[in-house]
Image (tube, rainbow, N blue to C red; front, side, top):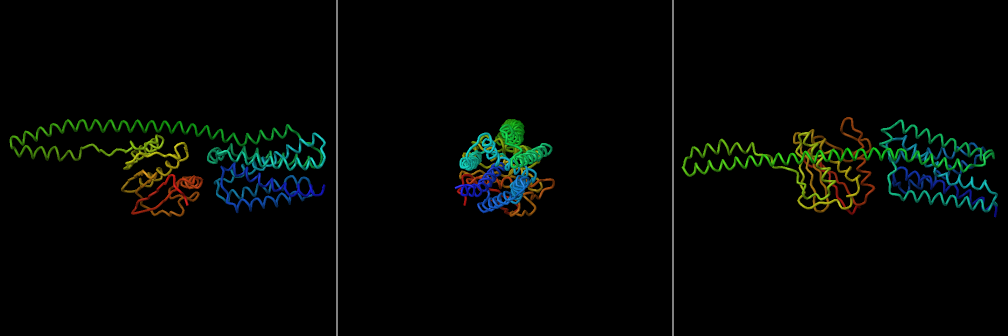
Length: 437
């Protein structure tokens, strides 16, 4: 019985640790969906690492080798999968994942040192602790929240470096205490276990909270921009209305002149009225082309288009919206990231059209829940690479925009993006509520 329990514990412990570590890593990296092959191969590699690490006679090697190699495996997997661009961010969450995967086990072992329990009970508690660690990791992974704050951490490198050094310090200290525990110079401490958990949560939530603060500030600024764009558009409408009022007044005078010329059968007056007034009016008539926004039910989408229209006006572009049927973004109206995707596509269209002689951007919204963005373009674009990470045809650009769009669409089964080029026009069609593949 003793040998069976010992063998069972040695066999299952590394499996639980590997799965728990992978779940935590996936959660912290923004719920990235690893392929089944990648997940299984990484789990097997972590399992082998844990088995080999437990085979060392030296307690110091046994405490440090497995955790260090596991962190390197997670770092390599995250980099190969192109989850994020920054290796430092991947390293941070790999270290945190390793700390979280061991915490429940460390806590259970500390509790056991406080009371004397039979070996059978201890082995059962070890197995139960692994099960609890798995359940906790899986439960947290079900929370639909994107923990990944890569762009924030890249903007705040000092904070990122402090978090990495802090997590490395905790990892080294935890391994050292595990070594002392193995040589019976440290019996475990509940205070340390809870302090470690609090410090891990600080490492996770400090950038999350800071990022949310910046996002809130950005939304406030974006709201101010939307209000400004709306006010400018209202002023444009008022200016058009005033122009039409003046033209209506002039038009009445023109009709009166024509009527007098016709009644008096004075052809010279009629010709004078036509050539000097009516013909010239073709060049001074106010442009009646305004955005067709009345059928866009979604106010957030309408505001986003108004903002981009204002940007297009500043760049002297012809920006038109064709929406003949009531249009509402049913499945995405509460998803702010969706509107960011629309903004990225419109920004790219405006930047590309600005470099052309035609300078045209057109937005079509159809009743079959499609948003089509068409812009004039000049240079040939490799459609197979435009969504690749860091690929860009523009100077001083990161190439992250369309990659972000690609990742967003991969995570949503009810949206599809089709990209094509026809006769010097770049076309991107978003199909919403699509039955994808």
